[in-house]
Image (cartoon, rainbow, N blue to C red; front, side):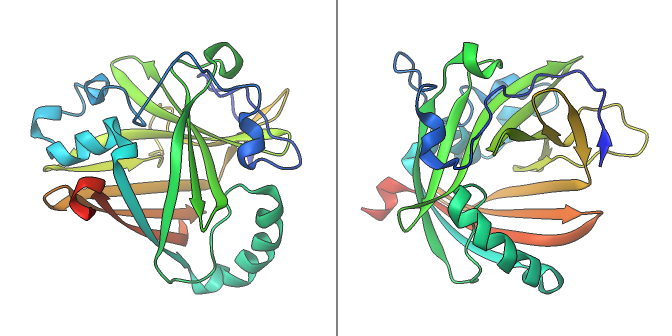
Length: 246
């Protein structure tokens, strides 16, 4: 872990001993409504050509609350003892609180508007996800621009700090790849960072998402996380429009 000197916005919202839905108290913006993680995917052009992207992927990111998510969580074998220890704390913190079992579970939740002046980034919104009524993720979504590249800027409040993932969005045919991996010679903002009140550190963690359409109103996604380039967590998602399941 090294001190980071990059200049880009990070969420100013920090958690306390418990994150969960407690983090939303006092920061919710009741005058603004968002139904998606992104207001308009065209903000990621020219690197992402939306007219070539699967329309269901675009619709999911702009209207996320219209979909149901089913997740299968796989902690890689070498990391599972650490995951069991982490799970003891995550159930109390209610953040990055994932099941140990690979059994498919539904992730429910909502998107909540966040006060921009408190977060410090443009158009922030919280995606709160739960498994069986218990909070597993509270992620604060926003974006920032550097040169001609727009990055997805995601904050995860932790006790007295915030972990930030900066992702590039790139097309893969009609599918979508989102990645925080930084190439050795790159000056991109991509990466995973930990911010305290006075310092910011670059973490040896990277993540990649691959999202593809597999049927009408149906997506499949794979989320892989690595530490020192070694995979430790993989989540497989099945995503379906609610109208197809009524």
